[in-house]
Image 1: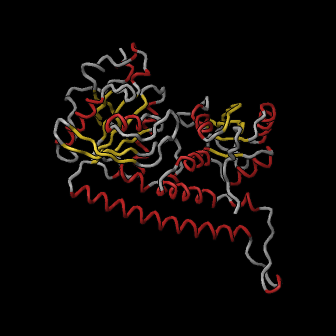
Image 2: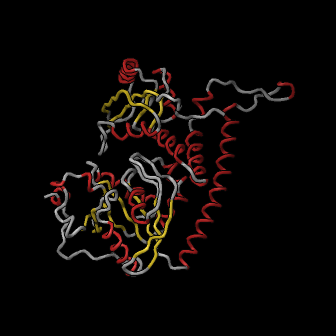
Image 3: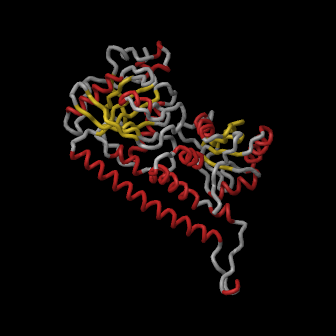
Length: 400
């Protein structure tokens, strides 16, 4: 069976990045995030190209004229692979490869490749393989279109047999079934562990947030663990749980570091990582970590909220942890970050408590512990109360 995978030779493959503005809000005109994804996967962005369209072209996604421009720029820049910031249909991908004469991949496969490289636990590898096979099953036609239908019957005579694509699809279907069965066993094991924690009345806190927001750094700082943390996308894929001691109330709580979210996270990955994300669904409190230094932090908050809603965790109480305060110029830091290191932020019309920290420098960690202790002391589902006259200050107001 031929695999679809981004090649990883010793020298990084030069890639041309392509983005199409279809009018949706939050379009990344600089293709900054796609470039970071490409570098994380081991590719080298050598050129970028963007264009606007009202709707994708059914055959080539960008139209024949723009496809010719992509081909010319790839030739001029020495690109050996084309990466699209949007998801391509199997037909569009196949047509583009024929037109351009180069491998063409999309954002979905790029994320799958990174997940495949980073998964370490048995569960994580199973989840990545499931998502990869589900993606591959829709693209068999472009890898097997050159094969003839096999002949059936004794001595290779008789009626037509199965095509290679049919054989391959059946193999993939069987593999998906086996992986789902193994993941179901993992889910049952996790469910047993959660029931044991519930019987012990352990308060569960999960770290969630956009990828590279600093969740693992905050996790390590709070519980003094050694979970892998790096300034890169999807540095952590496997859920890690440790006990956090709260001295104010003399009690332990469980703290879990989960996989980061990203814009346009493939639905196959959301489904495949349901077992891992279940830690967030079953949490008593979510610490939603936000990269305060990112100019798009508000859009990233919205993306995380969308994924939480998709996995059924939107009802769980949250505390926004605005991280990387040390990366903000001193004059732009919220004026209350010292004496009053928290306020209230509006999400979907409701007040969510917000605290400002620098996990790398250790700033604000005592406030985070104090907020968790307050939630532990309150009845489950009861949130802290915002002042009656509270307004929800924008970050620009906070900077002055």
